[in-house]
Length: 606
Ligand code: PEP
Ligand code: MG
Image (cartoon, rainbow, N blue to C red; front, side, top):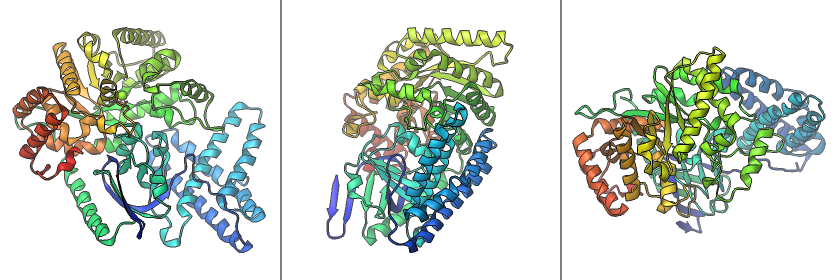
């Protein structure tokens, strides 16, 4: 929906809010692959200021690298040395001095000059005999990307220098979001609420709205934008009264967050003593501290595939082992559930010329031929297709297991055959470690994600083969209702309250409990307060969600009544349509959680 006031260039857009929060900031169109604007300097007088702009961008990059080194090196052992190398590259004469020279010689802007420098350096690297040294050009490219990002932020007036921006693009990949610098929000034409980009945005706490057709042409650089991530609303160049109104809302929202974050370490237990484990979903291991601060009772889902998506090289066993070891050590004694690589579908390596490894190239080519990636070589299918890579990951997990409590979770299991195949590989990995005298935890629990309808149907059989179930509602809804979770055109039909979804969850809980194993939900549904009484009533043992959702969900559990929620779930399971489920649930929320949900707050189900 678009509302426009042509005279004032004022536009209001309604999209899909995928990450809550209110942001008021200037817009910055984001070009995939970095913002590299090429401009000729009109006069020699501009050379010195342009060189200065470049020097300042390099200085800011260095400052941030040093800060990152302080913050993360304790958690990621190899990180410090990578950063040290990057700082050296920053000041290398062939890059720093050469770019300054090119600005002066060719009278072009810093971005263009840096790009020219890069292609010259790339040629030198390409001529190197040693393949390892050749591949180190990747580091130069990463450093340059950081400078480009700083240049784009600094490419404005003095008063805007160092400002935070709302990035606007046709689409963002999860990997791009992870690598962005300082966005306070983002807007995209494409995407849906449970896409992986949405999950990452929420995890990082960046408010975002997607599903905004033509937003790239409607917004210009420097437009003032109000982004309301909860309502999915965007106001471009708003009038003053609306701006004031939103500034008030922003203050209230921050107060609300601070308030609910307070008693985070209390147990998630109803007054009658029904307790649930409220765990965190992590995409990157460094988020673990934040998850614990928010009161996580464990890591219910570590999406290990992000190690591939964010690393320029193919992660080897040592890299994986160190990452898992650090993660387990920090979380210990709380359990960490590592999900094996869920690559494929919409989580593919982004292949970049000169940046990506041979392995990424091979897989990118293979995936590019898939007509239906969501139904293709994804998740466990991909791991069984690339057994060596799978074994490497399993070995790394087993080796790390002595540093904490680890559970292994297998994604997208659709049949018992797959699970049996997986267990055979586990047995051979264990055997090899035993022979080599490598210590590991003998009692690692293994579980499967229930996210394909066929797994629901055979859940009673699968339940006898594993230690726990984790329901991936993001995919389960997608596959059960035949709705692409990342497609904004059908996102209105992506319905967590569809009677089929409710019945599937109930069936899986019954199968798990019948076999005496635990069942949790790690899809996005688990972290939304409005679904909590339903999930509680359906009998889930644990919920896993993005860390920031933990405090409000725990608070709601503490004010829930186990008997009432059970009755609510029984009633909702009888509803013939999602609309009826929604209405009953909404009435329940307003009645029993009046301090959170208000009668006139229809937005809670939009
Ligand atoms: C899910 O499908 O619900 C899930 C948690 O996995 P992902 O979102 O990573 O596919
Ligand atoms: Mg999934």
